[in-house]
Length: 132
Image (tube, rainbow, N blue to C red):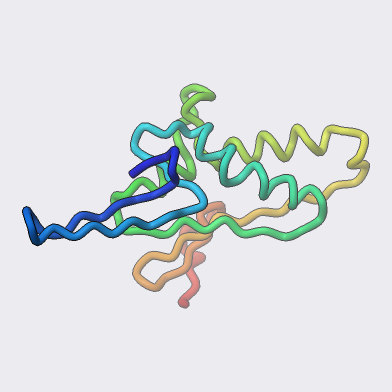
């Protein structure tokens, strides 16, 4: 993976039978990417749009154990380890303190789809699951 070229290269086979396929992306993050780098490249522009009046959804998808929860939540032990959710909340609430926003309603959901069950992770009642 190359964060500079924004590519991921897949190598199949060995020796003379080796085949390389490269894929180019808008952004590429590695295990060495910081929470701040991920936030700045992905959610910061979305938050600007939300504050301009657009609705938005942030969607994390991937296999179990690939780091989705870590990227979304991070750790609240120190600001450098905050995931994109705490960073987004902080950015939004700092922005609405400005005089441009006199009367503001902020709504958010944190939904999880697991084994075809939909659950609201912000709900106080864990029995509030909906079927997909």
